[in-house]
Length: 309
Ligand SMILES: Nc1nc2c(ncn2[C@@H]2O[C@H](COP(=O)(O)OP(=O)(O)OP(=O)(O)O)[C@@H](O)[C@H]2O)c(=O)[nH]1
Image (cartoon, rainbow, N blue to C red; front, side, top):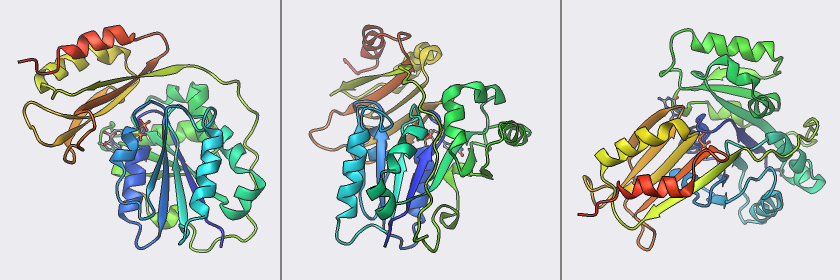
């Protein structure tokens, strides 16, 4: 039996991991394997994804649309040799990935026969201004989508969803647009009940020149973080950040991790799991446009956040 693939794309911080987590939490007995790609050296996403009944495979420190394309195909072959085989595979791309390159790679004849790409889902933050759709990367992510999921409607103003739907319609994206509050999309919409025996090939469009636009800077420490000082540090860094996420222990709540997220200019904290022995207590990944933020500046600002006494 072929194993259908769901490819989840969308810009940095749009809400892809939230959708994947919701899907896995509502798998209703489906055996789902998840492949997660974080562009940075620390794969925070893999730790934030729980509950994949067939495990989470993490591909980090590169992008599966370019430098890690071979790793993606090898990972899929390994998943397909598992006994029992997964029934579905979800691939979450990094927010900087051009999914048309991944779609092209998934048209590999062996993969297509054994694990056909069934659905491409693009998650789009409904609160982003429609002018964000002028961005070539955002357009590339929308153009390959079968389904566009509008996230964060709860944070956006009342007309935002309608404005975004209109902007997507103007682009002539041939996709179904659905609302996805906190990642809620019915699994039945993403995974077909019956699987086509003759998978459809897709024409992903012309290859775009690889663009080095973003870089990730990773920061780790064995010390817990002071929350008020982190708040100040993020206030200073925010104008330079496209995205940040991290897991750390805080001075205020020792003994368990706090999940830090910065997306769309908004920072949030949530309770996490217990720290894993042998792993640095504080890990944060920062994504910025190339050349905007130096490691020295970042280290200098964050050094003030760790409890030195
Ligand atoms: N309020 C609200 N927050 C959301 C919603 N969807 C996602 N978020 C939050 O947005 C932040 C980013 O969500 P993720 O799911 O990590 O985004 P992502 O697209 O996987 O991010 P990258 O992989 O880093 O590009 C997190 O703090 C989520 O909790 C939503 O519908 N409403």
